[in-house]
Length: 307
Image 1: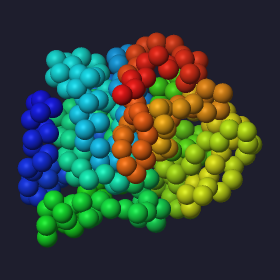
Image 2: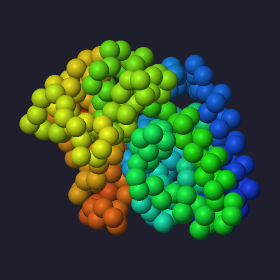
Image 3: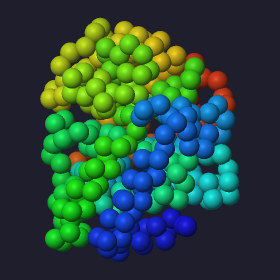
Image 4: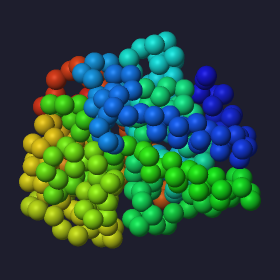
């Protein structure tokens, strides 16, 4: 497998091949119960080992060029193929808002098929439940453009797979990764692990997929996004205590430099795509040694790769 071969395949894949890939990945994720490789799994919460290296990618939104750049620079495929202990973690929002959304999903799902115990796919608000799915949602249009009459069938199967994506990743005593914000009323890690089962009776999943940190406030306030909340540093600190972690890594928000910090360096936001409709100057991703000690998100700034 090479990046160039994946790129070519993504442009020419047929609807039947794409449907077959979705089915295979669905079966892989469905079988990931309890553990896969060195990953421990509870519900839809994954626990990372304190060894190896992780490359963490924020929102891609159909930007195939940025995804190719990250994979080329990080050498993930080459290193994983050689048996190195490397992980590739996506924070959600792979498609929508970008013309190459189908191709990005093909890339990502092929990587999951090839390296099931090395690739982790988190759910973003653009892969969320139908009742809180991001709008506008243009993935059906992109799939119909690519696959014609089969586009809606592909969309239906892909949407079903989205609901199997994971909710969060934790490296205990270090950091938590999720797409958007912290569940303000969570009482335990199990509330994160099983947020998908508690939705919509409890707001945990909605807040994980939709909320944003805000500096200078306490508590939480309704978000202009129409779902989730703006939450203050006190909410972040409470959540991190519950999870036994020091800081949070998330996506969801555009950032001019591809990344930003909130809440006194306790939250790192990564945004890994460029171009319209966001027009950020830079995109960024993170490559981090999982055995290293860090006390806050700002301690890992030197490992952020901006492009």
